Amino acid sequence: MLDATWRKSRKMLALNPALQTLPRLGLGTLSASRYVIRKGHAPHQLSTLEAVGAALAQIEARPQIAAALNEALTAFVAWHAALRA
Image 1 (cartoon, rainbow, N blue to C red):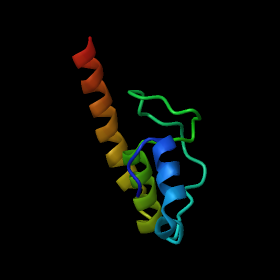
Image 2: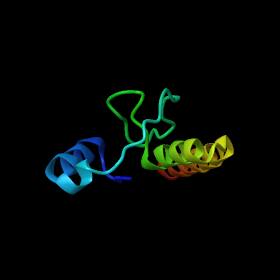
Image 3: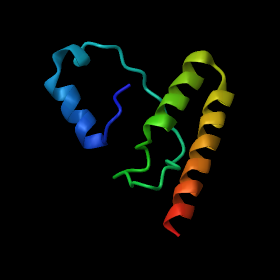
Image 4: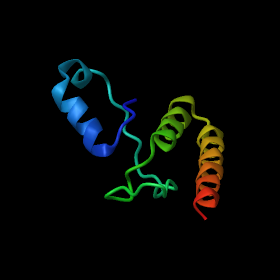
């Protein structure tokens, strides 16, 4: 899992042939990102935490993994918003 902005992760992938050979997991159709601290350019662009949760839920066939991580993300976003208020 590359943890970077969308632009930087694409650049990391393009510049590193070893990364290009690794298997990839398509996450399919997902809800729009709940991570509103930074905006993606498209609704399908998820935070690293959301992507990891979706991947683990898919690999393990346990959707509660993604649900638990999404709850944590929602709490973090709320905490961040409270700090800025």
